[in-house]
Image 1: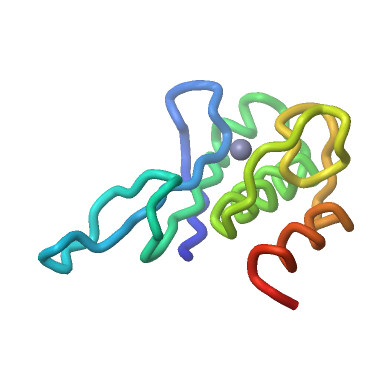
Image 2 (image 1 turned 120 degrees about the horizontal axis):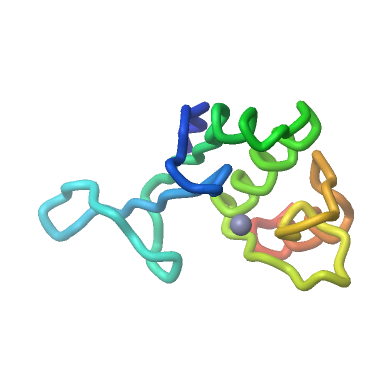
Length: 108
Ligand SMILES: [Zn+2]
């Protein structure tokens, strides 16, 4: 996993995770979320976050959320307190729900 502090996203997107796999020639190519990944790149668009008035805490949430995607966590609905929530609830480190999911997916 690479974590990249980027500049402008060009949209209101503040973070994104890109997934890669090796093709039959061994070349690293873009993967979908349903593939088995070879590696991931996590981007946080710092200049975009600055324009949108993100605090340091907000930025930590963005990176924590994107790293969650890189560890194969998906979004959760609005009733669950998690780093994988998309909107207003902003934990800046994994909470028990996330820790349970990570243990379920990756072991203890
Ligand atoms: Zn997300």
